[in-house]
Image (cartoon, rainbow, N blue to C red; front, top):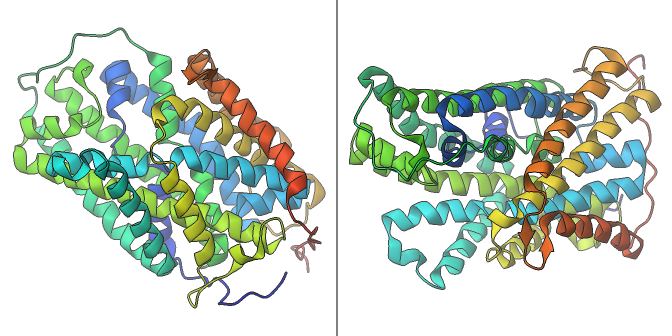
Length: 446
């Protein structure tokens, strides 16, 4: 490694702020569940929200828990794959993750803008939409440059702030019982696969917190605890509001993005509706803020390995890779006009392939470095690791079946995904790189 101006990242992120960071990297609360309710109805939505975590989220959380505890390095999943499979596959892992971030990061400012528009419609009219969206990205970048502690502490406060209105809504729904249904669209046929795909997106991103492993206090203890705690919190904050709303008798077929506000207005009153509007803005900002923290560490780690220009490894006095943050923020701002809805299949395809590489790395490291210090270790031996790998791949197959034939412009979404993947293979020889010798970590007996 080469020494660069600035400080090295410091281990400042403790357990609760880490749970908050994972919460926003994966979820951001019940916002986004409306389309599942509309497609699948209440009972099927609850079933989906109960099953998907076990076959999609839990395997990933266990994998991330073991590898983050064993290799708590900046760059997270990139560092794991590079160590297990070599620099080529490490680059492909980083490429797939950064490309997926382009599609991901287009939606979080959009969530902020959607709810801002309910408070102040003129603020997002015409070209102001892109300007305000760029402001959200810039604010998150500046927030991140202030340091990981500032991001973690504010994330804890924002998490409680946006969940409080849903706790009130759920409590009132459970006490009040059935009410007169709100006006709804004509009943549509059940689209179970469509609901599963949206649920996958709402439960996606457990490996994102791994990229800041070099900045987490006591990662061997805190990563497994934070991952399990965040999984329980997210599943709870999804299922309880849906179950409570089911009790009211409100027709699910009329649900669409923003319907939580209408439900709160009807069940409790306009004041709660406005708090959910404000919470939606907090959700968009919090998710964008947390994912700037996550994705910006990947170019930093790659620059330290000479796979990207060394300027991306520059840090400030707080150990934040500020150049990487700024470059990523500019790229995401340029992608704000993209229509995310048509690109969700590309996002899931690209993300799932990067996830597959992480599971392969988990298995490869068990074979290559059996003595690696694993303070958290998945039990069950190799058969369990293979089973855990197959579970999310099965869900991916369901998602691809659902989106087969969908188009984004002149090509199908799956064709766009294949081109993106191929481009990573073609770009790798063009990178200015110097292979880094990765020394094995001390064994448990040393």
